[in-house]
Image 1 (cartoon, rainbow, N blue to C red):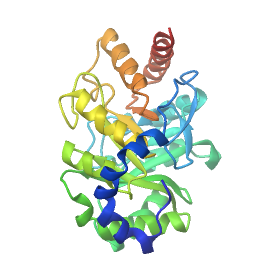
Image 2 (spheres, rainbow, N blue to C red):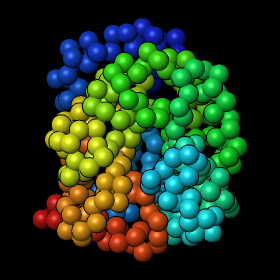
Image 3 (cartoon, rainbow, N blue to C red):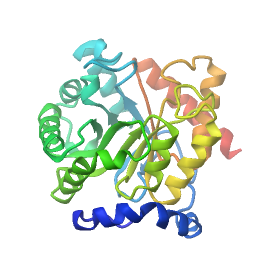
Length: 298
């Protein structure tokens, strides 16, 4: 997936769907499924972005909205405790968003940690270039960083979302060119926007809801979602899974194990985030992920 220049963007987007259909066989052969990670602490690369991160990441938007989430309700001290424990255990990917109010919490939690030791994924609701530019600068300030690893268009809900976000998309590509961000993409709510993201060249990384229970997903049929994720993976897009535990609704130990095994077994999800709310939960997921990897290798 060759990086797009802004000059080529409009022409490329206009023909993306046709090219994706015509070249489906080629793309499927071009990008093999992921090998099973060696351990829960494995390092992975998000598609063809070149961004290396941890297999497991920490989410900060459990029951998130209105500048709040279960993670921010821990307070700065509690939030920091979980983040630092994640780092100690090799978890370096942190998913935040303006909507969750978690930027400043993560900034405080990461104080003193070298910038190359963690990766940040955040999101914008911008539709035009001016708003997107403002968001990038504000987010960097709130996070206390010079660049953002992954910036996503947040919560795409309809087919053709790209036509309503052209200005923001062009600004995000401009930001990648000058080093303000490293990659851009989408998070989707609905199968139609997810299918659009699978074919849209702008999308380098997608944050996708996936679990075997069909809970809080773009389709209640996990196989339907998995098929689109495979299309994305075949195109070289990075996929970060979310809602692995159905936003905390998957609580039975055997079902947690089954979900981890399901997601890891797809071979298309590069990394996944869990909305950790305690250090004990971090340790439990690491142990269960190790168990799932072992079961898949057996």
